[in-house]
Length: 343
Image (cartoon, rainbow, N blue to C red; front, side, top):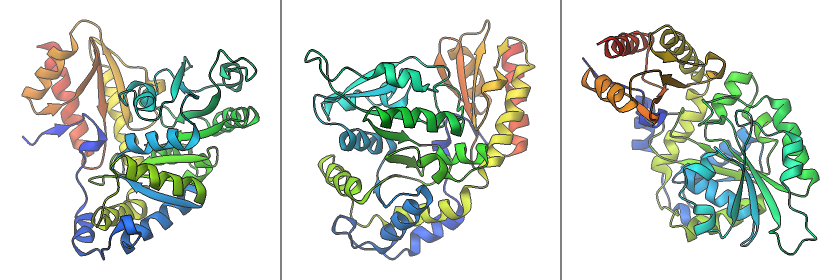
């Protein structure tokens, strides 16, 4: 039986059309700005986000780090949700590399209210406290189950931040999942931020890469930071070619991933010993709790039958649907889960 890999949407393989485009892409040196395929991707990406400019980066982590560096100076502070990727999963890069302190704020399912934004800003006339320079939002939100910010809530939080003089960076790794779920353009979401990073490698199934978008000035500074961080690459059109296919062909199909995730979550919720909050299954991520079985036992049992998953706590599991996972794979996964739980 072929394996079913639900560990992450980053495991998705590029489509045949992507592979063909990568093999035949016109190339140049992107550090010199000479790669025509990369330049075209940046033009298309910036337009999709409603921004003036964009630059390719090797990873979302680098894109977020650049977003912090562009929006805050050394010794300043950035507000983030306490479960955000920037705070939880990026190895303290904001502090280690940018000299920026992250102030984590507990939120309801990753959605920050305007009141929370205003209350988190430090008084600028107190020399004992750092200057609050920026804030980052995450949409969709990974650790809160792939939930989508309501557009009105994101706008309200962004407006509150701007009223306080803060710059806003959006971790939009899965922004296209959010856009599809909301039935809006990604630019409607990105409009709430000064800068945005989105991932080509997650739901869009590219082999490598993310894109940082913002104003011409922000992107000029971002390219400097990209070089500083070792992210300047040469004939990057090989990767950008896949990104162009992704933006043209892979966005609308995310609805299929969401439908598969919904079916999977509903099936899991019916299994003995499983708790799954269906209200938080809004896109392609499913988090669920095991009432009795330790997560490592479940993960190992599933793996022995060809189902790969990821534990996120002692009894917590995450499944992620993606390109390459079909409806029949969902049913096979549910059967394996039931067998492991009832063995």
